[in-house]
Amino acid sequence: MPEGHTIHRLARDHQRWFAGSRIRASSPQGRFAEADALNNLEFVQAQAWGKHLFYVWPNDSRLHIHLGLFGRCRSYRSKIPAPRNTVRFRMANDVRTLDLIGPAICEMIDESAFRGIIARLGPDPLRADSDPEWVWRSLQRRRVSIGQALMNQSLIAGVGNVYRAELLFAFRIHPDTPARQIGRDEWMAMWFTLQRWMALGVKTGRIITTDPAASPSRLRRDERLMIYKKAICPGCGHRVSSWLNANRTVYACEQCQKRVT
DNA sequence: TATGTATGGTAAG
DNA sequence: TTACCCTACATAA
Image 1 (spheres, chains in turn green, red, orange):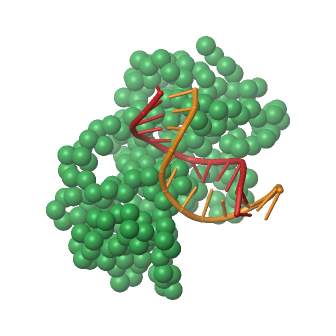
Image 2 (image 1 turned 90 degrees about the horizontal axis):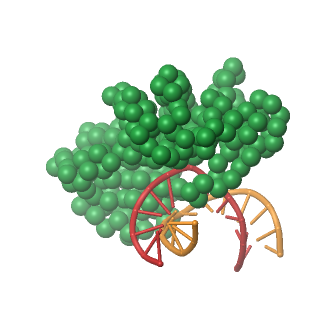
């Protein structure tokens, strides 16, 4: 589940459910001992930056959460189950209970550590203040492929393997194309597309890159994406290529997405 | 029961 | 580049 849209959606929901309320906190799994210190504190704010989620507490300390590849949150309003032994962190107020399962990171950090994390993240298409020009200038300077650049969180925060595949297909760009080949106007159009797609992702909870002629909720799983994990290119019918790059599977139609050097 | 897979990331070699 | 961490679920055996 977790590309940037997922994290922003979680931050939005957790803000709604918990901000301003006093929290009961625990670590059923026992692997987050500091949960005890949060018990009975007021939940001040939830924040999302790229794929990082932060819960702010009254002393400005933060709980820093990163879901990694298979972390997830589950929330309950009624018939709250006993926590499974994989629940790293359970947080509840009078109306909601939230379980955090399998996160890559779940740690308390102070203000300066928070600033350090933010400083290492590139612009996030889901944040209003983010600067696509900065990204483009960075792309011009680097000697990496656009496929690798899109996955680099210090260049662009929040894009993952699915949005990468979909974006490069939408713009008919081969993933191995050097990042510096991307023109400024083209990059701005790509950024705008990312913003639209990811905002729709926050709204629907799913990554949807196909034309939502049908209402998004009615799209079947295989109707939401164009190229990611597909066998056949929706544009030309050619077989979709997939290969491994930096341990992640890349998908592309090598007929439609011309290789440039 | 075992295996494979996943929308992520880091640290070691 | 490889190893490894985090978990759930589907499928195979």
